[in-house]
Length: 246
Ligand code: PGA
Image (cartoon, rainbow, N blue to C red; front, side, top):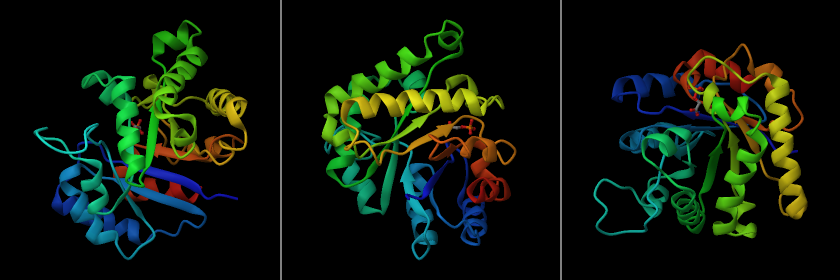
């Protein structure tokens, strides 16, 4: 059985001192059968890498350039992330889609860049509240997957981790119920299996959106939830530890 996967997305939070204190606390974690990844802001990736290098915690980035090198001021290329020790990278987070206008084409290029440097892309998808209320959730989710998968290629897409994050649950304190989350995770799993159940048999589907120590147990008990993408609660060592332990 594959381990559960818990990814902490620090977003644009932290500084040298608080990062060091948080990582010191994480290093004392006891979370068997759980793979833990932390995604600090790009400027602190090297700091965090030095702190976790002898541990089982892996390093992830929050973003990557869709280009490989050159005149792209302010961007970080996939080979640079790999160079400093990243094994994972988030792509298509709803904040990047909404605030930085990332399209499926951008996301597909980023995934291709990451895969060509042997990093695992964590591809985020999710519906808005209006889409949920209009009963469009399943269509939205499948379309988000299809539009990226078509560009990345089915074989390559099998190496991607998927994070289902309903936008209305991100940072709002409102979590999808375990049943709501499981329903969509199953839709995703069934869709991938309908394409190629062998190739996608190992695909991990994470849930994200206000995961905390109070709701993690019930969510992880669902058959198609393979782990979590955690924002706010990943900044609190105790909460993050409890989520990883569940
Ligand atoms: P949240 O964020 O846990 O603070 O809701 C999740 C995410 O944005 O990945």
